[in-house]
Amino acid sequence: MTLPLWQTISLAVTLLGAFAGLVKLLLRQVELRIDERLAQIGQESKGWRQVERDVMALRAELPERYVRREDYIRGQTVIEAKLDAINAEVKMVQLRGAKGG
Image (cartoon, rainbow, N blue to C red; front, side, top):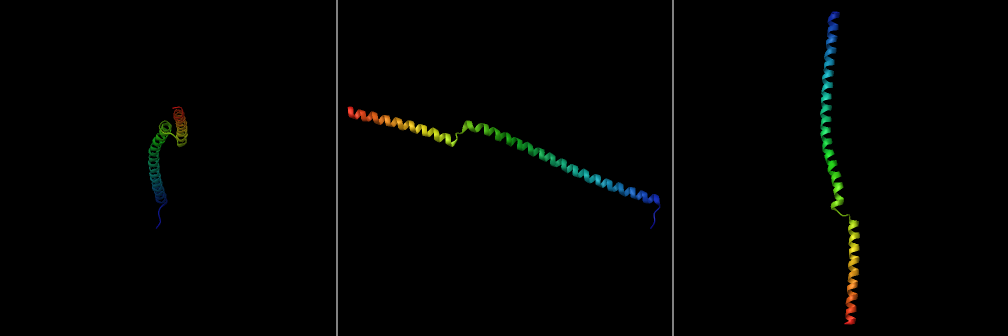
């Protein structure tokens, strides 16, 4: 089977055009898929930004609402020392009253 030159050139141009069209279609589909993924990542990042804001608000609020264990123990130690001192004073007053009365 032999084809004239103009038909061979026309066939080659048609095949190249079809191939270029397929490549362009595939590239467009890849581009759309990438755009979809970027949009999805953008929405996920908005969610993470909200979580980050919530964590920062919690970090700012924690010192106002909660006392660290070490601070609580230190405060309790001071209170107990004062109560022990008051108890010792009351016992001394009672002993003086018992001796004097």
